Image 1 (cartoon, rainbow, N blue to C red):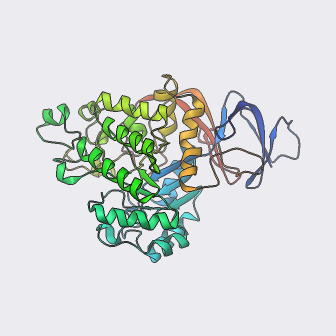
Image 2 (spheres, helix red, strand yellow):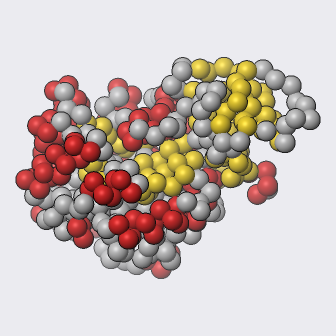
Image 3 (spheres, rainbow, N blue to C red):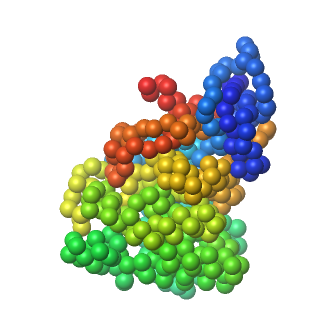
Length: 425
């Protein structure tokens, strides 16, 4: 058994925020209360001055296996997740081959079963990501896919999206949507605004996202499907989701730490490290994302962890791929830019990184209770640290060199310590 003593326990599901000790027995939580060290405990973790919370959950990661394992694989992605405090992640299906068939799904799930943490995956909505023919959703779900997404490629045919939503509604599974209309985009990855103009090209305008969000929110209202809007980046998209929820659509939304932390100005300083799909926008958009997190329009914080090789990100800006590695900085960015600045309480931040993503997929996770899963993170919200190295294979982060608040000390998954900062030091 493991005793975690002296910590501030935050559980957003029960509303608990007070000093508690936690006893873990195997893969479950045995007791929560006040206990004293004794010989019966295999490990005693001193959490004095630290926060004890449910293990974080990320519903949007790219672990690149199969096909692009030079960027990341399931093992290295899981190590990065554990270092960031995550005990459950959901991988996207844009691998090579795409996860649109039983054989590829089986391969991914076999690798996932060997990982340090709980690695789950969606399957593709359309065969080969072509947006034309639905995958065998029922079979893929029965095999273990937790939802469906063509993330990385927007679904352009509204009639096809409507069919897909009806299909996932029958399966009681979420469909997660990457909302960008390529017909409206000049150069992807950079906001169409003053920065792109200064660089001499047209970028990706906000309407390329918000128009697709509006369409799919209304399709979700029409079909009753559980539709999840991925990585919102602009004020108009937040407003559309807010309206859709008021109308009764079964819509949820996520925002990334990069979109509530940075603006398009970062591209001028960081170059391709700040090139993202959807791109970083203006300050008004960043503030709208934060407002959406505050009022519940945006349910979930997700990283869109998108690792790339160093040789890819050093290419000229227009040629470099979009995306950043985000698992190891997510919690600290939330504490630094949301909690310490008064936008969210620490409990509210944790809720958007645990209970809310668990609810989206119906996971038995994201809470701390006796009998519940022994998935926890222990962190020091006041510790300062400078972003420098990564457990991920990738280092494509615009936050390198930045000093953040909030350091993960220990991550426990299934009752086993999968990351311990003390051992690294």
